[in-house]
Length: 567
Ligand code: GLN
Image (cartoon, rainbow, N blue to C red):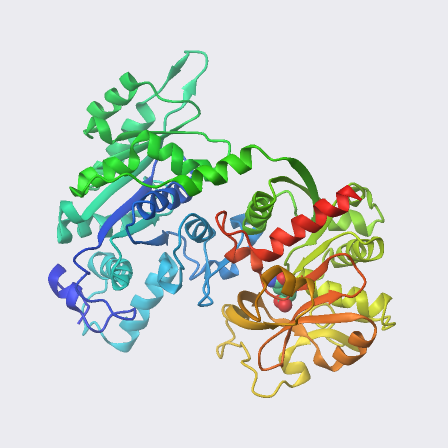
């Protein structure tokens, strides 16, 4: 049983919360990444970059994020507070750091790649109610910490050389303590050669003193030591390079090897971080700690990406029409995918965020200088009329348009209203009693055998079509020209769908169905005939774009925008 067993029993436990926790694959070494001093140090990007440095050495890597908040998953959290919800292929709604993990490596993340305090407690409470603990008092230590360890050990199933585990939050927070205790125990369970503690801190530059200060780092390490964790490697974030003497001082006071105090200066692009951390010696320090062979990474792909990013031959302007557009993290993956599309054509993509509600007041100024227009995903009615006006502007003026999820649904509504003559066309998301819901819930228009995503207990979580689905493309479309494939697989996160009752009418008016679910039941991509480039998809292509493999739709959207600019 799992109730407070010893370390070795735990590793063999068969009735675990998750799929199969067994003895951890003996080759897997665990790196635990913590952060100190302040939040927003770029722990996710640093962890992802470290994964890139290992992959560049031919090692296999897996990654996980442990989040101290109580939400069971981030699916219910506002993207305007917490940043975007990243969706994995297996349909898990996760923290946006997993997007960084996938973009910097070849990892496909999934349901075991993100655990929150809420999810851990939920599993323990469920077992307590089942009576699994046989009358024991259920406590943070050992029951919660054991559940955390089991979550971490699911990574071992992937038989990777390295498992990177990032702990969210900042050392010193009450919330993250059980996670820190769990990783402390993992060092005890698995030993020094199979576990490394990497701690990120901030070394601020105090202009009036003309000095960089190591004190916050010392205090943060003290905090870690109080709970029994002695960091093995320190990554010191700073605005400027940190002089050797300063790093040696940090090493002495923090009890860390001199070569294991690594500087992490600010870089102009996140894709420069793997190179910067390599130059700082991070990969070497970790290999040294694990007593692994010191090999040189092949970083040419990252050098190429940085060169193209830093030396664009042109600038292309994309207007992104959304609500609360000032919160950049809400559209993280789209912004990155646009950068990747730019890299594919040696173009710098300047994204101009346009507030949909301003457009509603017939202020089209934000669109006037745009070479391309993009409407991203979203929920709720607010701002939708402005987005529809922007889509009409793109359609009528032949400006390249990329619509994503809600941006596709609104494109269908716009076309239905202004081209097909269905004046009151809308989505049943905005009007439950709509006469013409060209976009609606699958259940509303009775799709036979549909995988309807409704939870049985009325929870908000998990009621959407989530994760990867196949899509068959129509030859001769812009979409087909982009992908050059008959069938693709893309990730979804939505409740509403194109209503098939209107399909024929819309096609007759000039809408092109460029992609459908292979059983022909759901429209996934639409285009508009006689337009230079108007593509709108029900899925989220941004989640699978990589800097080393720009997504075909983003690459072709940028290309079409360049051509529009040159007209
Ligand atoms: N609100 C729409 C739906 O639920 C679109 C969702 C989205 O853009 N991610 O279907």
